[in-house]
Structure formats: structure tokens, C-alpha cells
Image (cartoon, rainbow, N blue to C red; front, side, top):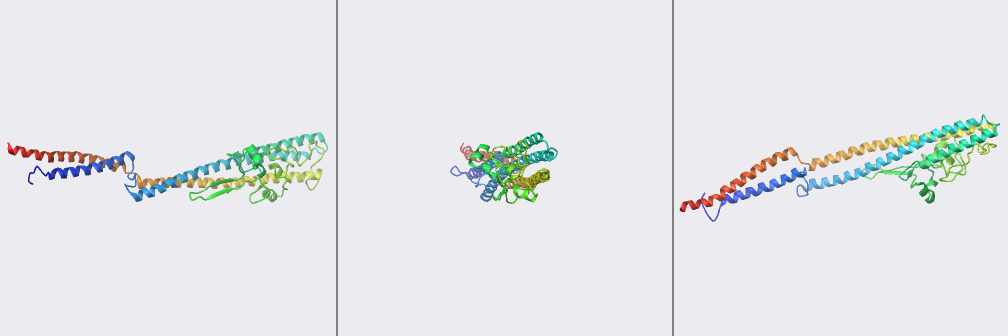
Length: 333
């Protein structure tokens, strides 16, 4: 190769090599610092676009999982309240049965009436307070009216939640209704009980009290007057013959509430299954994004070391190439 002071080909080659190494080194350092082989569309437009769409799905599935967690807590709270109501209804059955032992003792009957009214108040109180973030599946529809509903903190008597990433919506209809699939009214009829003439309160709906007002505890049961002198006339028989009918009504109410707990249990299993599936979907989407964009850090580390070595060699090569022009001076000394 001839020596020239106007043109240093070796220096140009060394500069081009150094620039290429510097560019590759910069990209590799970015990979090491971010942990991503694809951090912008410039790195890989197709992979970046797919990863961004998948990231949107991850965010959407996260919202679905949150909704499922809320639904699970709502159903769990309702199930606990329903089970407690069943326990109180069993006490009501005991009190109603004891009426047959005190038909000739008005004072005792009055005490039993007061006792029954207390139990019914417990039932309605539990139902009203089975509210989770504004959702109540046990309060009658009237309890969600603008005035009473606001007072009780009840926004809706139905539970609606998104069950899947594509927007599949599931609704658990409130149970405290006089008719309709899955309603207490239907279950009470199926249990051979009689629905109350009023549905303002849960005990009214169950046929255990009458003339109730939404948000107010009952003051009169259907079994016996408060003064203990008159047995209920809403059954097929009065007096001693009516005791069996009264007990049958309470038993039907208990059975209706057990149907409610069964429905709640079924919904719990569905929500639990969807929650498990939702977590799996989130993990799979995250893993998919990682497969498209995550860097192999071992390979990146090895490449970084290699490029740093090449950088030093390129700088040394450029230094040698630049010194060739100065060597021409020695020829004229």
C-alpha cells in the first residue's frame, strides 16, 4: 500500500469499524440496562406491536381479576348472612312450636310473640346489612328505592361482574324477590310455603311478618298477636290445629333460605374457577410478552464484553492508522 498524506485508507477503515462497534455497543448497553431486546418499534416493529397489544390484554385481565375478587367477597358476605338468617329461623321454629305448649296461657303467648318479633327483627337487620360496596342480594327490591336505598347504603340488589377478557358479563340476581328464577318467592312456593302479602322486608316475603316497611324492623308476626290473645288467621286452621301450619311455614322459610345458600355456593365455585383461570391467563400473557421482548441477559453480557474488547482494538487500530501519515516525515530527515 502506498503512503499518502492526502488519503489515509487505513484510517478510514478503522473509523468505520470503530463507529460500527460503537453503535452495536450502545444497543447492547441499552439491552443490558433495560433487560429488553425489543424496547421500541425501531428494534422490531412486529414484535413491539404484538407485545403492546398483549400488554393491553394484561391490563384488561387485571381489571377482570379485580372484579372477580369483588364478586367473590360479595357472594361470601351474602352467604354468611344467609347462613346466619337460617340459624335465626331455626330459633323462630322453636318459638312457634312452643306456642302449642302455651295455648291457654296468654301471658306466655305474649312473651313468645315478643320473642318471635325479636327474631324477625334480627333477620331483617341481617338482610339489610348484608351490603357489600352498595350491593345487597338479600334486601327486597323496595329497599333499593331512592329514599330507603340511600339511607341503607344499598345501590343495587343485583351483582354484575365481567367474567372474561372479551367482556363476558355475568349477573347474580338478587334473591329477595316474590317471583322469578332463583328468587326466595319461588323457592318458598317450591317448599310448600306461602309468600307474604307484602315484600317490603325479607320476613314479609318469607310470610313470617306482615305490613312491614323497608328499612324498619317488623313489629307484628303472623303467628300470634302481640298481646298473646289471638293466633294468626293467615293459615288454614286457627287455634291448636293451626300450630302445624305455622311450623310448616317456618320450615318452608328455612328450606327457601337453604336454596339461596346453595345458589350462592354454586356462584362461589364459578367465580373461584374464573379467578383461577384469569390468573393463568394473566401469567400466560405476561410470559408471551417476555418471550417477544425480554433479553437473554447471559448472551447480552457476553456480547457486551466482546464489544468492549472490539472497541479497544478498533481504537488501537485507528491510532496505528493515524500514525502512518506521521511516519512519512521520517523519510525526509
